[in-house]
Image (tube, rainbow over all chains, first blue to last red):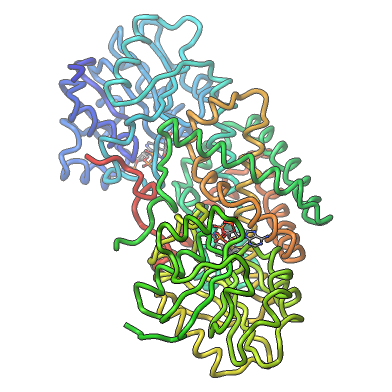
Length: 306
Length: 306
Ligand SMILES: NC(=O)c1ccc[n+]([C@@H]2O[C@H](COP(=O)([O-])OP(=O)(O)OC[C@H]3O[C@@H](n4cnc5c(N)ncnc54)[C@H](OP(=O)(O)O)[C@@H]3O)[C@@H](O)[C@H]2O)c1
Ligand SMILES: NC(=O)c1ccc[n+]([C@@H]2O[C@H](COP(=O)([O-])OP(=O)(O)OC[C@H]3O[C@@H](n4cnc5c(N)ncnc54)[C@H](OP(=O)(O)O)[C@@H]3O)[C@@H](O)[C@H]2O)c1
C-alpha cells in the first residue's frame, strides 16, 4: 500500500489505458477522487454504469477543474486540441502527464498550451492488450511492466519523483529518458512489430492462390500470433505512425535490409546463414522471460485443459 | 474412443511432434504397440525414462520392422537418408507418412525409396509450440487443429481413409490437398510469419541506438509476441526454408511490396491508408477465434492472476 499520492486525478479518455488507471488507482487507493472525460455519450454511459470514476464530465475542461494530476489517455492525434482546451483551466501546481505511445510529438503538440505554473511531464506505460474501450481495462495491466517518463530539461524534480511514485503505486517499474530516445526504443520494440503484423495480415488476406478460409484454418502454423497485435485500435496506431515517422522509417529500413539478406540466403540455399540467425533468437526470448516480461508457457499457454 | 487403428506404429524421431503422437496414441488407444527411433543416445534415454514408447531402437530400420504405420518425425532435411535406410525393411501393405512442414520436397526426397507394396501418404499436422525435444510433447497438441494429407495421384483410397481416421483419433480435423498447394498455403500461414519473426528479432538485436537490455525491458509493447515463434527449432526451420524456396520467395515478394506501400503512407503522412489497412485486420483475427484456432483472451491471457 502506497497511500494517496494525488488528491484529485482527472482521466482524459476512458479506453483501455484510462479505465485500467481508474481500476488500479481505486485498488491501490492512489487518489481520493477520480474524475473522467470521454468524448462519446456511449462511453460516458458505460463508465457511469460500471462506476469507473467518481465524476464523469462531458468536457475535458470540466473534468480537469481542481485536479492535481491530469492524465491524457486518448490517441495522441487528439492531444493538441485537448491541451488547448484544458490549458486555461488547470490548477496552479498541477501535474499534466499522458500515456501516449510516442513522446516527441506530444512535447511538440501539448507543450505550447501548458501554463508556466503547471508541471508537464510526458509518460508512456509500456503495457497493453489488443482490446479497447472502457470495459477492457483491469487493475493489473501495469504490474511488473515498465512505465517510461520523459521529463523536460526544466521539469521540477519533486514533481517528477511524485509521478514516479504514482506509477510504482500502479505496480510498474519506472525509467526516465529523453523523448527522442523513447521514440527510437519504442519504434523497434513496439511500432515496427505492429507495422509488420498489420502488413502480414494484409498480405495473407490478398494472396489469390490461398483462400481466406485456408488462412484461417491453418493459422495455428504461426500466422495467428501476428493477428493479436494487428487487432489493436486502428486510430491509436494511425496516430502512432503519423507521429513517429523518422524513427519508424529508420527501423523499417534496417528491417528491410536484414530481410533482403535472409531472402538471399533462401534463394541460394545458404543453410548456415539461416541456421545461425535462427539460433540467436532463442536467447532473446529467454532473456525476456527471465526479465518477467513474458510467459514461459509453451504456445502462450494456449494448450487445452486436460 | 476410436479404437485401435494400426496394430503397430513406428515413430522415426521423438521430438515435440513424435512425443505428442506417442502420448495421444496411448491416451486414445489408437495403436497396440508403439516403437520409436531417436538419433541421439540422450533422447533414447529420456524416452526410456519417461516410458514414451513400448520399444526404443538405435536404428530406424529396426524400429520399422513389422510396423503397420511409420511416421517420419524428424526435420525434413533428414528424410531422404532415413527413407533410403528403412525402404528395404518396410512390411508389405504398411503405410508410411510424415509430419513435415513442407510437402513437395518430401515427395521428391522420400518417394523414390518407397517400395511399390507400401502406401506412401505425406502429411502435416498444423499444430506445434516453440518447444522441442522428447519431453515437450503432450496428447492435446492436435486437438481441434487441422492435419493436412497430400496423397499422391495413385494413393490407395482405403489407406488414405485409414490415415484420416488415425488423425481424427488424435483429435484433429483432416483436409487433403496437393503437395504444391500445401506448400503455398503454409508459406503464407506459417513459413513467412516465422521468417519475419526471426528477422525482426535479429534487427532489434543489432540496432546500435537501442541497447539489448532496453529491447528486453520494453518488449511488452509488441516485440515479445514475435519472439515466441522465433524461438522454434533452428534445424527444423532451416530445413523448411531450404525445401520450400519458391513459395516462400513468392509470398515474401508480396509482403515486401505491401510493406513498401505502408512505408510510403507513413512517409507522406497518409493517415487514411494506414487507418483503412489497420481496420481490416481485426476482422481476420475475429474469424480465427470463431474458427477455434485462437484464444479470445486479451494479451493471450497473460493477464496476471488477481
Ligand atoms: N492500447 C495499448 O496497448 C496502449 C499501450 C500503451 C499506451 N497506449 C496509449 O494510450 C492512449 C489510449 O489508448 P487506449 O488503448 O486506451 O485507447 P482506447 O481504448 O481506444 O480508448 C481511447 C479513448 O480516447 C477517446 N478518444 C478517441 N479519440 C478522441 C478524440 N479525438 N477526442 C477525444 N477523445 C478521444 C475515446 O473516446 P470514446 O470512447 O468516447 O470514443 C476513448 O475514451 C493512446 O495514446 C495510446 O497510444 C496504448
Ligand atoms: N515444431 C512444430 O511446431 C512443428 C509443427 C508441425 C510439423 N513439424 C514438423 O515435425 C518434424 C519434427 O519437428 P519437432 O518439432 O518434433 O522437432 P524436434 O522436437 O526438434 O525433434 C526432432 C527429432 O528428430 C531427430 N532428428 C533431428 N535430426 C535428425 C537427423 N539428421 N537424423 C535423424 N534424426 C534426427 C531428433 O533427434 P535427437 O533428439 O536425437 O536430436 C528429434 O528426435 C519436422 O519435420 C517439422 O517440420 C513441426
